[in-house]
Structures are given as structure tokens and as C-alpha cells.
Length: 112
Image (cartoon, rainbow, N blue to C red; front, side):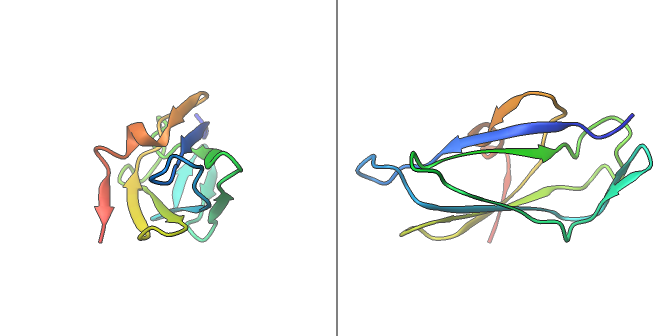
């Protein structure tokens, strides 16, 4: 088996429903290995919110069959202008496909 990727999407808005601005940084909490390939946590993925306050970013699944260790997570740091920075730990489901980040956050552990 090998790694797959899933497209993570989401949109942020201000209280007046105008598009928010800011950025999202994604980083693995530990190295993951699958099919003779390892991805190291030092490899951050950063994406800016577009003019609609949205992101669309491919992330490597940390839940593919054969991926070790099985307890790795993606740390998601949300930096939206005018808001308190938030950080979450999520599991990116196996791809291909698209998943809204909002569906991963309700069960995600928020980092204080």
C-alpha cells in the first residue's frame, strides 16, 4: 500500500458574513511511513484563505491502511485576522476525495 491524499476544504467568514482573511498551517505530529516512504513532521503545509475566505488543500492521509504509526495526527493552526488563533489535531481520511475541515473539527481535540 502507499499514501493517498484527500482535498481538505473549508470557508471562514466574519461576523458580518464577509469573507475572512488569514492562513492555515498543517503539520504532522510525528513521522508517518507507508510503502517504503516516510513523511517527516518538519514538512509544514501553509495555505492562505482566498478572496472568498476559503481553502482547498491536498493533505496526505495519516489513516491509510499500512501507515505507521497509527497514532499520528495533523496539527491544524488556524490564523484568521481579528480572531484568536486556534489549533486542532485531526485525522485526514484516506483519499482520493474531498472532505470539509468542519466535519473533522467537531471531534477534533482543540489544543490550548
